[in-house]
Image (cartoon, one colour):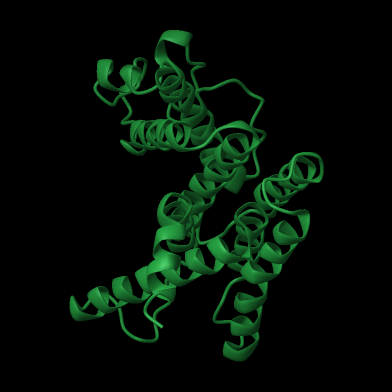
Length: 246
């Protein structure tokens, strides 16, 4: 029952994250006006807003004007539901709550960065403040570890940005710092390593395919987010395996 509730709750939260992803980069309020079709501006009814099922029932089109609705919407809802389900099966208590919040921030940051090349400060500041409040009263790790995680996430990318003279965006640095607050230094460094590895491998594939050159830039936020998700579930095993090699 807990897993089922977590999945349904994830679908609902995923629907809300879609609103954040669409509106925040455009400078719009996430509360007003109510949900509406971007094509015809018609306010949507509750039957049009059921996660996943409304998109399937309407065949990916607005009921009123027939404008296409991106498949991104149900995919984000399903992905959020899956993450919430997996988290509920592996964690509990305040650790679960904190990871649900972090995963929501990561999903929004990754998609906005992929689509717009930015990671909004409002999103990162909100995630940081909520995490700080939680860990001040209900720390998952010793509070010093949460604060060290901020440094473990933000400092390496800040140094990289300074050495590369702008090769690393400020949004990536702040996202890594927020991740570190929730994960602590060990899992944060694992997430940073995994994100960098995935970004490097993807860049190589794109260059071999002729879609990018060495001078082209790549958004790093999605890779950081993916590295964090992998680290949440398997970071300790990866870290143990790595250390056992020496």
